[in-house]
Length: 112
Length: 114
Image (spheres, rainbow over the protein chains, first blue to last red):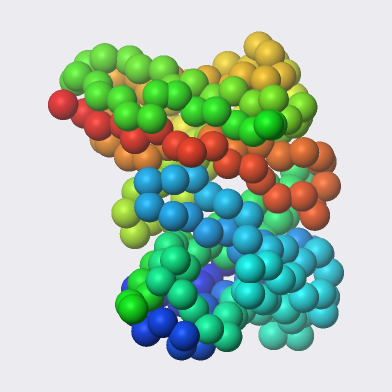
């Protein structure tokens, strides 16, 4: 079945460091790919998305490129801030009713 | 502003009680979903509904029930048959039957058994 695998955390960085959170997905069908962010005690918010191969999603300094050849959708940010501390979820659409399948989430902590 | 409202934010349940979590959306979305979130386990799908008066079981439906009598509302009942209900519950909706649309999430309900 459809699945998403993302790097296990927690990830701890210093402010202004470069961030990469790896995400790979099963290649069945033609999924859309998403990154969501969850701040403590809150629901998930859509961070960015890409709907076809080679698309790049971007928002708030975060970027991810839909790589069909490597079935990957890695999240990157050039310079993280303390306010980026949160849990990040990678997800793919799929199946007959386009339900989203989520990775297990990666906790990011950014220290000043 | 359009969005999804979950209530209450915190809920306490005694052993053997049924409790109902509310989820209301004013986004005119057709599809709605309930997820359970436990530490280190990501999101697990409980139930989903693609249209009024219809819903399907997700991966962990045992001990839960739902209804979809109105497009705007998708309440989740945690029954006494759910042996470990303490968790963070998230409701979500989606705009269209298209793979390029993501979900909009509510802010969640934290349920604790006391």
